[in-house]
Length: 333
Image (cartoon, rainbow, N blue to C red; front, side):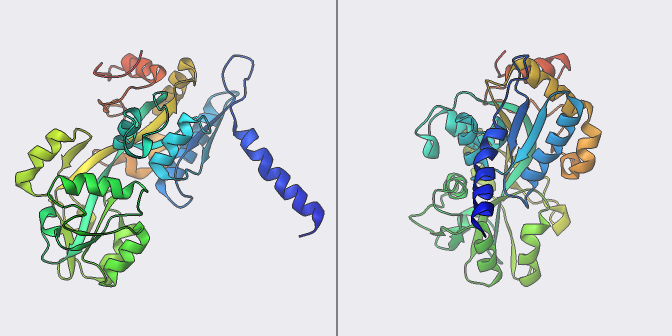
């Protein structure tokens, strides 16, 4: 690359963060809103991009841009708090930890990161060598739980710990999802414990192509006798009974939790109200582009205010109240 091209490339990279910052359009509203997803191949980035396209088209003078989200849920929460982005996808238990300054959120102020809407359900799934049927039977085994400090490991430790499985009695392998899946497919470890969306053929399909489901490996369920105590002490989670139909396991039980879209308190309430209105007035178009949100128990207007442990943005509360779906159990007005 010659000198002029190099300078031009560096300059364009330096300008990009400036272009993505909110700019006033003369009404006190930002003219650019950024929503962080996750990696470029994942659903979260696709979701923020679809919402951005619809909102940009329907609200004059506003550009809503879906951007990559480094660090997935925890990274998005930290970027929203720092006003590097205006909103983004998150897991409920991460935002709860942020508001309580726990774990990877011990330093910083995250009180201005508010819920915009609940979107979809994630499931903590354990897949293991055949013969391991319950979470408690993972003790003494080798289990991949995610990169140390990356968030997946904290989720696995929190859930498995409720069933008596922890780093002192189990060989946790702190490797990423892709490496963990490959290790199980190759028979190098006994199990994986990661968060997935339901019927996730993209991640789990290759494992079952290499190791036959029901013969070599299978899904592992939480222990029935421990579920009540675990869920009572962990209100972020619930017992999911909708199974994994695409894999022939419609009766599989698992630990589920909500994911959603957060937005910074500083985004004006009337703008958030209008954005929320547009999303649900164009919901048929949203689901046509993101069909997994149309599956039972996933996303809808009725479930958008379903997160009861965290405050919502006042603009969202106003819209949900107008539509008669707001329960008044949490939120900021």
